[in-house]
Image (cartoon, rainbow, N blue to C red; front, side, top):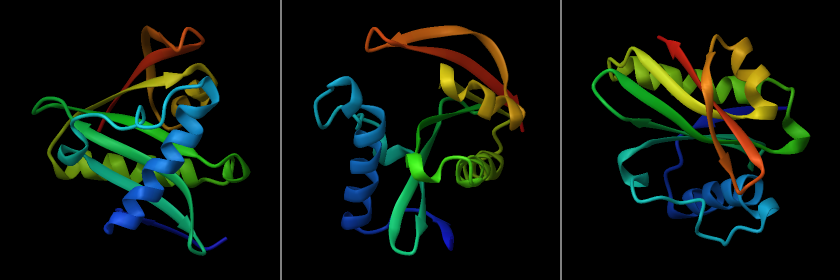
Length: 144
């Protein structure tokens, strides 16, 4: 593996970025294409992992307040899970939060991902919401 962590730059990179987000986070639940994009994308920090020209993971950081940022839309290709790529994405997003002088990062983790975020220093605050009537999420936080 020769993974590079970078921000998407070109329209083609953003197209691939959103396609991966849709395929992993929306399509399995029958959600329509386009549901993976919200109305504040252009205000957020996007990061992607590329392995030999293949996009394998994505993540986004949005700043909610002067003190708080939120990680959203984390997705890693199934074949690449467990290889540290998710950790690399989170590290890049956390570094951006630090650069923006934010001291708290929040996220809403899907139940299967809670252990992953816990290993990275996030703590469960509460159950947050159920997405698509199926996917329990947990609000997690970390001080950076």
